[in-house]
Image 1: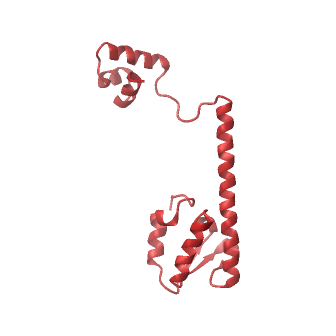
Image 2: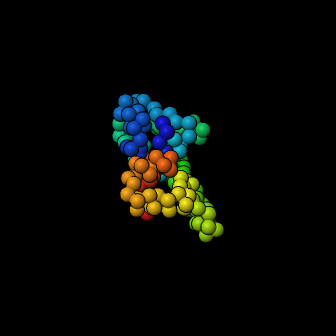
Length: 151
């Protein structure tokens, strides 16, 4: 599944479909805990739903099986650490973005039109040309031309 583990399990179509197909006595096996999710509460909710349906969870890289009491405790701790790690990564990303902004680095996609192109689009609008005509002249989409003409 290509959806992030940070997304709630109920919002992950493939995982949700898998959970629906599991039956009592089955074991859901994952390679790593973060494949189930990175939000401790969400992972624990999923495991609780599975437990009520008599489905156990096994995590291969950790050798954990929720069928036993020790596995449940260890899983609870690991889910907390997974959420902690995700929060630290998020803080680092936000800090990096703030640093980039402070240095004057422009984030995001490079503008399609230069300031000169935008000025030309405004002049062409004043002359009565439509967004479609301006777009053809500037070799951009109609919406890009419209934004330039009206910015």
